[in-house]
Amino acid sequence: MMRWKCTCAYEGTAYCGWQLQDGQPSVQGTIEAALGRLLERPVRIHGSGRTDSGVHALGQVFHFDANWSHGTEDLLAALRTRLPPDIQVYRAVSAPPRWHARLSAVAKRYHYRLHLGQPSPFERRYVWAHPRPLDIDRIAAAARLLEGRHDFKGFRALGSSELESTVRHLRRLHVTRTGPRIRIVAEADGFLYKMARSLTGALIALGRGQITESDLTNLLRTGERGPHFETAPAHGLFLERVFYR
Amino acid sequence: MMRWKCTCAYEGTAYCGWQLQDGQPSVQGTIEAALGRLLERPVRIHGSGRTDSGVHALGQVFHFDANWSHGTEDLLAALRTRLPPDIQVYRAVSAPPRWHARLSAVAKRYHYRLHLGQPSPFERRYVWAHPRPLDIDRIAAAARLLEGRHDFKGFRALGSSELESTVRHLRRLHVTRTGPRIRIVAEADGFLYKMARSLTGALIALGRGQITESDLTNLLRTGERGPHFETAPAHGLFLERVFYR
Image 1 (cartoon, one colour):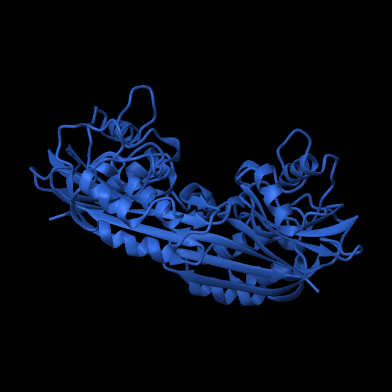
Image 2 (cartoon, one colour):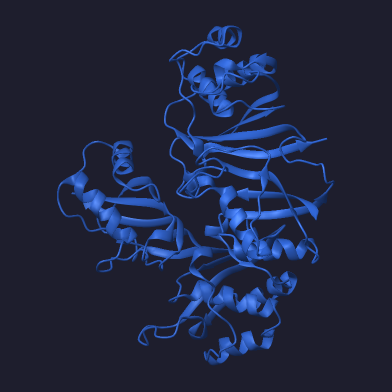
C-alpha cells in the first residue's frame, strides 16, 4: 500500500461541503466514489479539514492509501474521467506512510472575494456582491489589528465545540482592491468554525461604519460576539492553499 | 416614447440562445418579461443579432421604446431586481428614434476561449478544453490567411439560408496564448450562421494537423466545406462587442 497526497480544486456550489453527510452530495463522498470505482473497493480519503456548504477550493489536500502501479499521470487521468467537472484533482504525489493531510498541516490560506456593485454573470457564483460604498482603506488598516496570536473565540460560529482551544495565530490578514474587486487573504495555523467568513463579515461591517476598530479589539479581548456583524456568505470563500512542513 | 440603447452581458448556459423560441427560455424573452413587469405592458426588444444556444455575451446590444421618466440609473437598478443573475443589463443610453440595434451595427467582435489540458472547475463553463497538443504558432499564422474580404460560405453551418450574400469582411482574426489559455478574436462587418465557431473549428483542426493551410484557402475559394473539421462548441464563444458608427 502506498500513501497518496492529492491536491484538488472544486466549485462548492452543488455540495453540502467537503465532509461526508448522509443523503447529501459532498466533495469527499464524490471523490471517494470515483476512487472506489477506479480501485474496485471502498476507499476512505482524509482531507486537510472541512469546508462548508458552498465554499470553494483552489487547493484542498487529501490523502488515501492504495496499491496503484500505473504512475501519477495515469491516476490523475483516471480520476478526471470519473469525477464531475466541478471537482478537479490536479496533483498527486506519493507521501511517507505516516504523513497525514490534516495532522501534518501547519497552516492554511483562505481568500474571500467581494465585488463592489453588480458582478458580471460570469463572476456571480464566486463573489459577495456589495452595493454600498465601503471604506477600503479603513478595512485594510483594521485588518492589521487582527493579525497575530489571539483568542479568536469571538470570530467563530455559534454552536461551535467548547472543548478545543480557540487561540490561533493569524499570520496574515491582507485586504487588496483592484477596481471593483476586493480580496481578503487570511492565513493562519488553523481556523475555527466559520472564522474566515466571520473575519470578513467583521471587516465589512467596519467598512460600512456599523462597528469600530475598538469593537474589533474588544471582540479579541472578551471573545463575546455581539449582533454587530454578519458572517460573510459561503460562495465568496476559497480555500487557497494548505501548508505542510 | 424614447428609444433606449442597452448593453448586456449574459451567461448563455441556461438559454436556448438570444432569440425568442416557443416554450424555451431565451435571453430576449427573459429581458422582455422583466421590462414588461417593470413597464406594465408588453415590450418588444431588438437585439444586434442572435447568439446560439449556450453562447455567452459580454456586450450584446438591444433597443426598445418606452416612456421612462426616472433616469438611466433607475432603469438599470429596476432591471437588476427583475432579471436572473445570469443576465446583466449594465448600460442604457437614449438613442435617436431611427437608431436600430441590428440595422445600425457596422461590425461585431467575438472571441473564443480554449484551454489546453483540464480547465479549473471555475473556468469549465467558459472554455473549450483541449487535451491534445496544438501548434499555436501555425494556427496564429494561418489565421492571417483568412483575414480580409472573402466569401465565407464554407465557414457557416449547413442548412443556412441560401439567399443572402456570404461575402464578409473579416477585419481581424487574432490568436493569442497565455499559458494554457488560447483566445481567438474575430472581428467582422457581419458573421454568417455559426461562422465564428466554424473559423475556430477550422483553425483547431489545422493546429492538430488534420487540415492544411491550402485546405483553408481552398475552402475560401470554393466554399465547399468537407468533413474536415468540426464546429467549435458554443460554450467557449463570447459576443464581446457590437460596433456602431
